[in-house]
Length: 233
Image 1 (cartoon, one colour):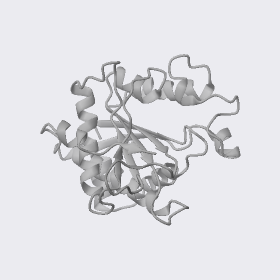
Image 2 (cartoon, rainbow, N blue to C red; image 1 turned 135 degrees about the vertical axis):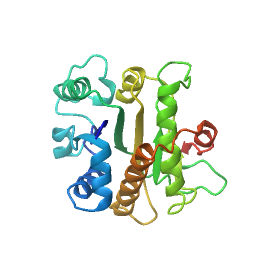
Image 3 (tube, helix red, strand yellow; image 1 turned 90 degrees about the vertical axis):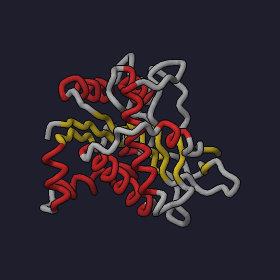
Image 4 (tube, rainbow, N blue to C red; image 1 turned 135 degrees about the horizontal axis):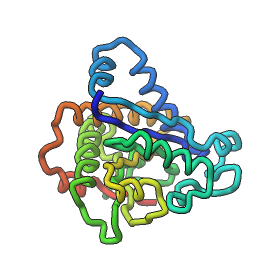
């Protein structure tokens, strides 16, 4: 397909839920369903399912050199950081998906506090947190993902803090004019293995991509995005 999508997961070694969801997505693409055929006819995917294998092995946030890869987007001191940037520069994606987990302590900012089972962010590209055409594309995909998840987990979808940090990968790629979508897998009631959350992340991935190729993201959805409640501890 003509639209290129770069997805990476487990930049932090102890954040494995979205890795599972990404493999669920790869299993879908390797199937023979009509949906798989549609996705593959519209998109070309580059997937890095486990960016930090050493951190995954010992189940820690940092890599083997005790560096947080999500603060190394500018200095590129680590081999994993350089690999991701190389993939970005060679593949030249039209969209990026940055897949993470967040701690169980996060909830959705509302009167009736519930877990933030899935949270999204269209990262800022500058200190003012302005919204340009590139960031708007990411916002519109997030609005589509939030809409379908409200049917499964109403009032359990959050919006992550958008303070700008150019050392973070998502902020850097947004700054480099590629719409970037952060997905944070959180807690669902009683689901400490996060198998339900895994399913919801998979659903969100598929729905967002469908909206892109159906060209159903032409209407300005910034207000809908801003209405997604913030995460809170």
